[in-house]
Length: 482
Image (cartoon, rainbow, N blue to C red; front, side, top):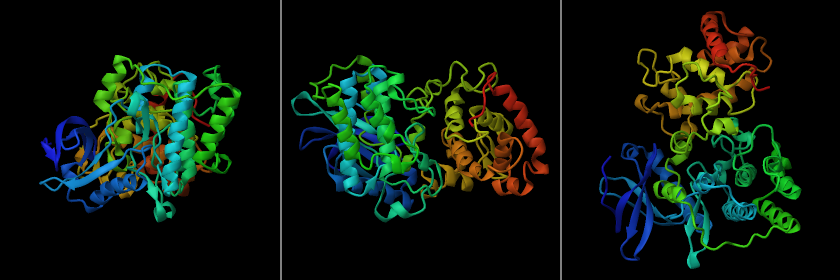
């Protein structure tokens, strides 16, 4: 990757981060004597018109809202080599994720931040835009006038607006924060999907972790949370979107009213004295937007960069070191455990579990991330064909079809969870072991399993192999999700 020295009139100082589709650089506006963040499309996507269009669309959406409660776009242009770029607000204090990693938040601070995010989301929805990927790493913090803080919603890489809201919608979002309808093909998420994400983010701010499948009120994890706040947050997390708060404004108002009745004061704080760890994280990752257009960075950042926090369960958040989901004395590579737990907990589906995902990967490739089988057009740890993976990657077929060398575990393992959660729902009435039916559907097709009323005969040796590995990897006494 060539290091540009400038983008238009903006000097480029250093790289802030990079993803599958873009890089983000710390720049300097010489004329206004101000730091900026500059997002540049990766050079290998320059000739893809659809990718360029989506890159520019993100800038246009942010510019359309033009609010201090969102990352603002100041300029757009093109480098001499043809790569488009746009210039944005630089968040010098990092993200909410950095803040949560540094120390637990006081109750009043957690509620104040949630209210600020709700106000930003309200402005976004006012322009007919649905974010679809609201989470702590997509909320930035910038030092404002007087040393106070400005909270900004960022990353519209997979946002939808206007007539695109009614078009075919493929699974997209981040585990732990996305609404149930976002896990389904043509779930057609509207602004109420963002209300769920807002509730999940608020839950995380209050408790230190995103909500789990059990839907426990925040006060069960943090007794200081008042019952009135429990009610507000849990309504936002309703699986039935018709039962959620009707708008971000309604959620924010209810949060403020409940805090007032519980005598919690939400006054804005003075500039925070942040622990050194938070400052280091901010320096490394204070990206003014998400790094990968169309949500690819939502997966890239889920592993490694942020400690493997990829699922709703606390055990999964730290890579499952205690074997809550997978036995630790077997051959599952530690570097892939977090991704496997993410895929196996993507939704509640009979038969689906991290142990099943691990068993399928073992049967498919022996956990070989570099597997290449050109004769069958299958690549990577999950043996995806590029054309099929294109439907299950974060942005679906709206993103470019990945080349074989781009089929990394960070892309292909979460896609396996998306596949199981979407296509597995068609297998509900099929008799037999639901886990093995899922494995057979992946190796053949869901329709083949439905027609055979179970595992087709030609795939029984494959599912027998999966069954052996499943027994090896499943923790003692663990059960598949009901």
